[in-house]
Image (cartoon, rainbow, N blue to C red; front, side, top):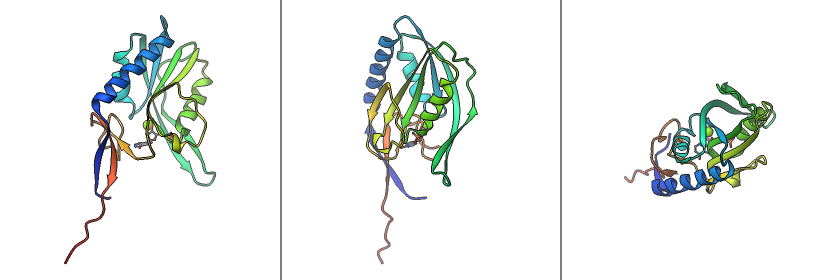
Length: 182
Ligand code: IMP
Ligand code: MG
């Protein structure tokens, strides 16, 4: 393990404003209809909770746990469902809510799986997007912030299960090793 500090990238106030903006966009798109918000555990929980409370659109909440791991032999990613939805998505307006989209591989697979279940519509809402890291094309309907290729934590996002409860988004900065001056 290395020493690190956390520098604020996006403040609590900036996040709150953005969440309101995203909620207004979703409300515009689903006037009078209902949505099923699907959060991917655990990273999206805090974002989803705030977003859901800003929506005027009637929403049902459900959650999935997926695990992705690299298959070094094939240099492709496989995504397994570790906990599936409780809700039936058939004929529903689905909005997948994600904390951060990086390579895009996780969301791509989740989209493929959900598409086979015949939703009426399916959209993606992510708080953060790291476009430089994308490995697969994915169309994002609602994006909070595009960020540079840095490792971030906070507002649900972890580093080895730590820092999810920070109210802001911070960049993990590795600190130079202390050299002993003798
Ligand atoms: P991907 O788009 O399939 O590469 O995976 C996105 C997932 O990787 C996110 O939902 C996070 O769980 C994790 N992730 C990507 N970037 C970061 C980061 O900067 N900090 C913490 N987790 C990250
Ligand atoms: Mg995640």
